[in-house]
Length: 114
Length: 111
Image 1 (cartoon, helix red, strand yellow):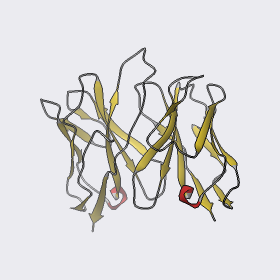
Image 2 (image 1 turned 60 degrees about the horizontal axis):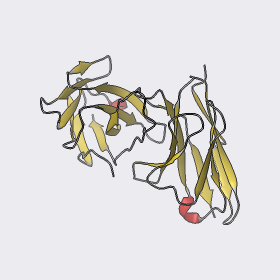
Image 3 (image 1 turned 180 degrees about the vertical axis):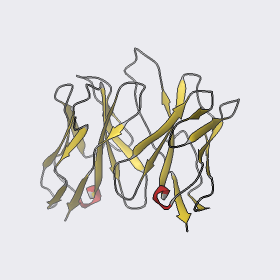
Image 4 (image 1 turned 45 degrees about the vertical axis):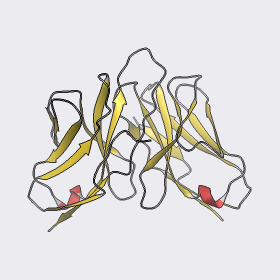
């Protein structure tokens, strides 16, 4: 089973910030939070990841709560091209192990509205 | 640098036929994955390979077999295709704790 829960769908007005929440209450200390998105039927695309500090890149910002049980992906100025399904996953980052099972949940379908 | 390449892009099978989906990556990644995606649903992990020579079951392995032929290639085989295996199949690769890179997908229909 996926180790994250997300709302199934959200709307956002074009030009406004899109804030996508994710709960990962059972996250372990050695697990990262990753976000991907999938536009239409393309292969998913990496957005951002973090361990416990907030992260920002050219695509988005990631805010992780202090207890690491939840996070929020922020698209600062949503455009129509940001309409996609957004996936939040947790992933072990543990060198030397063969365990690397990466499970996706159903994600959040974000619709950016003109 | 092509990234992750999947072949074929489209395939139609009759029930009971067999086929192999091919996946190759040129990024020297250790880990490779096969996912399926059904309409309106998220990605479900079929099998994964954390390193050359190892494979492990994911969430929905029944009806599939995999081979990690070498570090570059990870194939998915359907021995006796069923209509329930109609889906879009994605291959992905990554370094152990880095981001996943996905292929463009194979659309499979089983009649």
